[in-house]
Image (cartoon, rainbow, N blue to C red; front, side, top):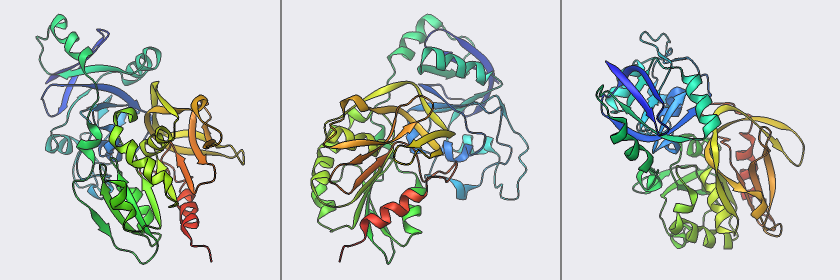
Length: 357
């Protein structure tokens, strides 16, 4: 069946329908990872977006459900150059087409995804529609496409009730803003008892359990939309509990302490982004998925100082808070998919939680 991707600037790509045949309007973004498509498809940070994979062949090792980063597919749509019809891997349980159908994710294959990525890089992230309707009318659909915005995604992706991963080590409170599973797993594997809280949990409830540390997770959408959560983070900041934040959590902590954020032209999404530790000068290759960044020019140096920067565009990739046991990063040290170069940051958090004698 034919499918069409219509961008808000009027560009139309024609291809083949994959997954569900329902029509969807979403924000079109691109990911440069060569592998890890299942982790991308189940990353809650993609809620409200349709993901373009720039690597030309997707699905060649099928679906291994153990690799999922959440309980279901998260993006609104999936865009590929070629979808593998015959996966081959000893861990494969299903072909990717079945996964897309089971999760009601519409998609399009057979388009020039690198040409699409080039458009998004030159013009910036834009909205688009995936449709199988050959009789679409541009004059009718373009106003609808332009009107779309990503909203309410943290509430949509956060857990609905508290969950506890037992452990005999430090007690960590994980605020789920749309968390990937490997964040809790990385802490639990280090012996932590991890209590996962819904995003809108009050700070008083978290602090009343006397956690040894607080983890703020990744998540989707514009951080400035999370007004209620920012107010609670101000209370967590005021406590003396060690805090480690990733991605959206990093942005929200910055907003809670008076800094600002802004949207990038086309974001950073992939498993090959170099970040530089500003203390040591060492460069790490990181997994990233964000469309917003902390604006370094708005930082109060008495509150927080830059700790990491993106080697490609010099945007902020991490902060260290002055006089506090708080550090935050924009990239994903939990990886999945991607390099595990920065997994040591979880060990740093463990050291931070050690009680002083």
